[in-house]
Image 1 (cartoon, rainbow, N blue to C red):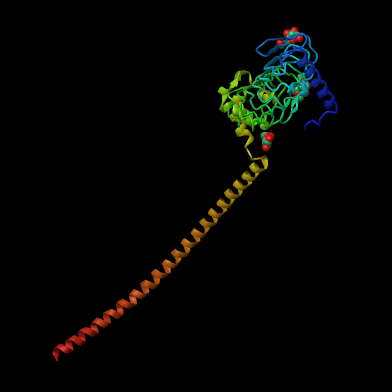
Image 2 (cartoon, rainbow, N blue to C red):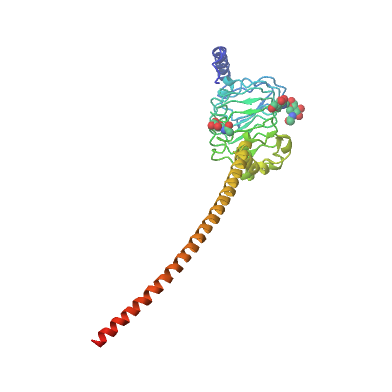
Length: 325
Ligand SMILES: *[C@@H]1O[C@H](CO)[C@@H](O)[C@H](O)[C@H]1NC(C)=O
Ligand SMILES: *[C@@H]1O[C@H](CO)[C@@H](O)[C@H](O)[C@H]1NC(C)=O
Ligand SMILES: *[C@@H]1O[C@H](CO)[C@@H](O)[C@H](O)[C@H]1NC(C)=O
C-alpha cells in the first residue's frame, strides 16, 4: 500500500533545490525568505493561518520549527516540500481540505512532536501513516466527518505518543491492539463517533470500561449501533459485551442439553422401577426360602430331640453298668 515514487518527483525536487539556492544566494541568512502572505519570526515560527491558501506554501525557511497553515483550503500536503523541513516540531494543518495522507507525507519529520489534522476531509488512515514520526507526542485528528477507517497499525511506531484525539469522526470500530501497547499514551479522545457496540468492537468497549480515566469526554463516547444500544456509553456496555460475545452455546446446544436431561431422567426412572421390582422379587424369594428353612429346621430339631434323648438314656445305662462294675 506504499506509494510508488511519483514520476514528477525528480523535476519537482530540482525546482525546489533551485528555489532554495536562489534564496540562499539572495540573502545572507541561511533560512532566508518567507512564503507569500505568511509571517515568519526569528523563533523559526511560520504563521500562515487564514490566508486563503489553496496550496502548501512555498519558500519556507529550511529551519522552520513551527508551521501553522490552519484555516485555509489547502488540498494536499506535498511530501517533498514538507520533508525538507527536518527540524519541524509543530505542524498545525487544521481546518483545510486535506483528503489524503500517507506514509510518504511525513517521511522525514523525526522531530515533529505536535500534529493537528482536525477539520479536514480525510476518509481513511493507512498503515504506517505516522510511522516515521518517532517524536510525536500529540496527534489531533478530530472533525473529519468522513473518516471511517484507521488501520490497526497506523500508530504502532509512535512510542512517544501521549495524547491522541480522534473525536467527532465517522469511526465505528477501532482495533486497539497496537494502541494499548503504546507506553506513554495517557489521553484518548473518542467521543462523537458512531461506535459499533457489537462483538467486533468488544476490545475497545472493554478498554474504555477498564481505563475510563484515560478518555476525554467519556460520557459522550457512546454507541451508534446496534439500535438497542444507541446512546449507551462504551464503558458501560464493555462487560455486557464480554459476556455476550463469549457465549459459545447455540440453540442446538440447548436442545442437546434438554434431550440429554430427558434421557437421564427416563433412564433413572426406569432403572429405579426395575430395581424396585428386583427388590420385591428378591424379598419374596428370601421369605419363601426362610419359611422353607424354618419348616426343615423344625422337622430336624424334632428328630434331633428324639435321638439325643435316646442317647442319654443309653449313656445313663452305661454309667450305671460301669458303676456297678
Ligand atoms: C475554518 O476556516 C475558515 C476560514 O477559511 C473559518 O471561516 C472557519 O471559522 C474555520 N472553522 C473552524 C472550525 O475553525
Ligand atoms: C459514515 O460512514 C457510513 C458507513 O459506515 C456512511 O454510510 C456515511 O455516509 C459516512 N458519513 C459520512 C459523512 O461520510
Ligand atoms: C487487530 O489487528 C491485529 C494486527 O494488526 C490482528 O492480529 C487482530 O486480529 C485484529 N483484531 C481484530 C479484533 O480485528
